[in-house]
Length: 115
Length: 118
Image (cartoon, rainbow over all chains, first blue to last red; front, side, top):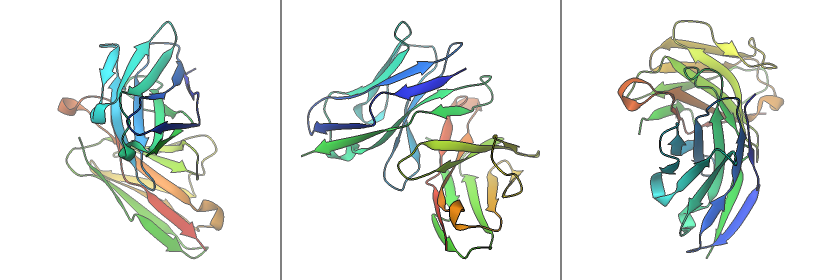
């Protein structure tokens, strides 16, 4: 069975400092992993996707994530936080056959960016 | 990226009425779309998978007669909340699954519909 756990429900950083949002997954086979961002009362925007190619995945807005199979982790990072990064972030794993597209969402991490 | 339009963005209705929410893929065809429900401060819960030209597949615990899904074309899926009650108030989000040259198995999400049932 596949599952995903976001280790922090809330992360607070100062503007200009690094961001780390942690995610661990459980998968019985090679997963596809995603990070999505949701701003208040908005839909979800894809930040980046891992699908068994390069383990370091670069996404939009300066975000990147590293797939570590030995640690079953897919943490999201950004070198320098911006006020506009304040939002809800979801780590997501696909399940079922690769063609079903079904996703399992983590519980989400609220990123707060302080001036 | 691909664009998914969801309409309306906000709807208020009286208890007992039905509400229809539309989800359109604007610049690609989607044989598969998904409907999610999100409660405040919580994650997304998959309600059903909508397949063009066939019946939707509902997740366990989701009432198919309550939440009617129609996927009549490759760019449009609708969710109708029938006989809505206050407990149906929620944020509903759709997504469309890409394929072909845009890359496989990426879901692009609509902006969501906030339903308030009085």
